[in-house]
Image 1 (cartoon, rainbow over the protein chains, first blue to last red):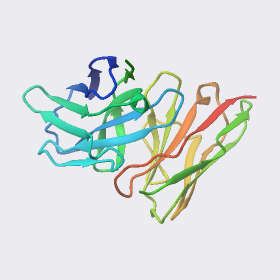
Image 2: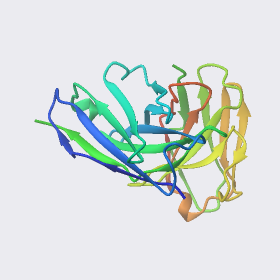
Image 3: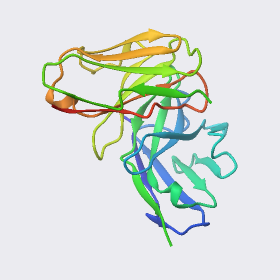
Image 4: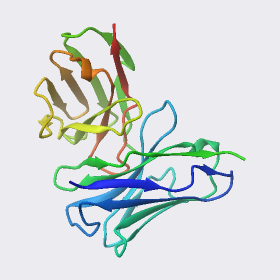
Length: 120
Length: 107
C-alpha cells in the first residue's frame, strides 16, 4: 500500500516561492505504474490539477500555472517536490500529492494534504 | 482545456434515496471519466473510472454511466456514509480537469 505525506511551510509571503515535498512510502517513486501528481483545493472550493511527473523526469503541467510551477523527483529519497513561484493569495489552498495509476487513469493514492496560506 | 460541468451543485436527500449526479464535458471524452468522493477534511477517494468501472472495494450501490459528453453517477440507496461531495474528472487528456463538485447532504 503506497502512502504519501506532504510537508513544507504552512505560510508563504506574497511574491515568494511555495515549496512542498511529498515523501512516498510503501512503494517506489521509480515505479512504472504511476505518474506522481500535485493537486490543490482552495478553502471551500473544488479540486485543481497542478501537474504530474514520471520518474524519468517527464512532466505535464496545467497551462494555467505552467510558467510558475516546477515538479521534480528525488529518486534517492523517494520524494517528489513542488515549487510554485510568485505566489498570491489565490494560491492559498490545501495541496495534495497523489499517484496517477497509468493502467486505468485515475488518482488512487493520496496524501492527507497540507494547507498553505499566502499572506504577508 | 476540457471544461467539466456538474449538476446540481448541491442536493439534499434522505437515507435510502436514489441519487443521481450529472457531469458534462465540453468535448467528446469517450469514456475517460472518473468519479471521486470527498468528505470534509479528507482527501478524495476514487469510486469509478472509465465512466462505468467500479474501483475494487467500492460498494455496488455506486454506479456510473455515459459516454461522449454526458455522464451520470448514481447512488442506488443512500447510506449515512455517502453524505459527501462528489467530483467528476476527465482522464482524456491533460490538464486533468475536474467538475466543480456536487455536495450531497441530509434532508
